[in-house]
Length: 460
Image (tube, rainbow, N blue to C red; front, side, top):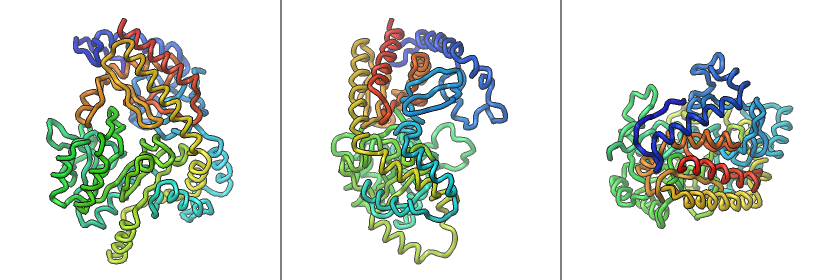
């Protein structure tokens, strides 16, 4: 984790030597502050492959994973007693804060009534109408992850269109859906680098183009063999890429004309407002997916269909051969999911909560931008609602190719550890920060101050 690159190459306007020195110093500070954690997890958690329950826990840039004792609101405390202002928030899974009171009450109440029984509960009676009112589409299904929801929605798209191909944008992320694990490499479609055990050419049934490239989109759809375009409204899992003016209107017009369905994945862009980016900007998807934050941190997701898609899919189901659809998991649609989703939709994802989140996100955006300007760094800040990201390259970025080129892993890793040592946690794989209803102005101020201290170190 602490390997030093002694090359002279600069990243984000900072020399490799300066980045390496910062990371070395901050790694030592991190270890010194966590003797208990070092003893327990410094050599890996016993019994787990790679020493961690999920392999990506080793991808955090800290010398070893932070061993959490508790999390509440927008604060995490580790077993050494270090308190962190949490702007990662489970990379959106806890976007509304850790254990919101209504969610905690719902979990306690449902725990005594059974956790899963493959049948609906009374809370399910409320969930359907809540989803219709909140997100606009009439027909909904429950899944456990956004990956599952996207996978099932794409099956429906292929079923009702009779087409095999889907289209994705370079730099996209839709969980671990196989068909979306493609990239443009030197302008040519290819499997995403690093896939483990993938023996198929995923580009055979997946078209990939750059985000915001309307001529390429029009050309790809002209063949009329694409079942569905799947996209986030804003690319968020690379360096953030915002849609250009008119892009979404054209995307809807072109897909409709080609008989291609449009799937909007709002798992990250739900940061925009109570109805997501879709409602805030009047998008009209055929299919809609929302994952990890919908149940306050309990694994759950939802996916919705337009009236037209639902009717076409019902017709398909009536005529297809009997048997398992390949969609659904036993634990999906369990009563614990219903209970916490209802609490989240009714009591947590409120207009007042989003107003607070948006206000502080604007403050964070302005504060980080001021620091970048003060130290004359060739960086910029992107924001979609309560989701803010500093990007160690000039901007704005136009597409996934530019986003990949803007990524500066060693620099970002050094900044991440330096911020942790100053009491602030941001998302580990990109420089994303979330504002929750529990986040305070004081926490935002501390983040801006910590960011300024790190910028001063890098530019001294």
